[in-house]
Image (cartoon, rainbow, N blue to C red):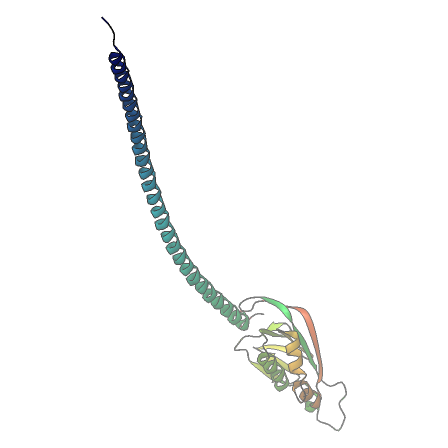
Length: 234
């Protein structure tokens, strides 16, 4: 059979066409694969994005709950602090009362005031005008209490809030216990304030000196007093 020129051309065209069809199919197949890969990636991205959003929401909820709990704790702490202050105030008040009533031993700074009869008594004068009386002791004690003394003792005998002091001749009786001169009055408190109060111009010390009472006031860093819960012992 004789091959003519148009047959060659027709065959060449068919070859080219087949190649183009095969190439187009391959391209289409690859594009489909790419689309499938992209769809899968999108699904994964969507899944992880949802998980991230849920995590963010959970974190926000937890943070809100944490802040709420912190506010509740802060409220509890404020209430507890208030109760602690209240209890502390009660304890301090109770201790102050116990100091006054002599129920507990106490130690602290303060002053010691010594009162003694006059060494020299003129022969033409009344002896009673030159000795210490219960009035003088009361003057000192009242001044010390008004100046903030938390505990007072006379010759080592702790005074109670209802202690009774009276003069019996040359001695004084404190809750039935007699003490001769000199009378040493110890007071626990702010030593500077107590001393200044006694030494005021026209104050207690000047009045005592005017009444011929020998007075000595000393500040001390440490004064100790035992507990005394009754007027029967001290």
